[in-house]
Amino acid sequence: MNEVIEIKVLDMYNIWLKFKDGTEAVIDLKPFIGQGFTKELLEEENFKRVSIEPGGGLAWYNGYDFCPNYLKQLSFDKANCIAFKKR
Image (cartoon, rainbow, N blue to C red):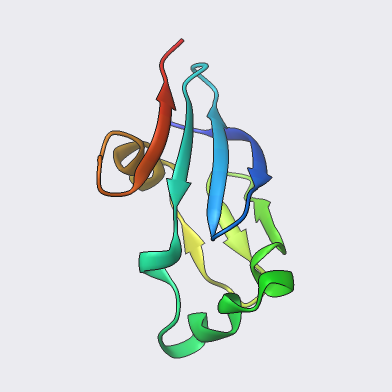
């Protein structure tokens, strides 16, 4: 199972992720925010309030989340992944 173990919020709605298997990726999450209850995440301070869930996914204070398997899939997607490093 995929699990995020470390994150760093970068600029322009990008997040650097490190997975338990050592894979690292920078993923652009801008395409996933801005509508409905995610609109408030367009404010930089709100976007930075992300954390790692107990299951290894990402979650924000408002309940928006990404499961770790989907994040891993995004890390292989050239449309969303800015940088990728397989360990």
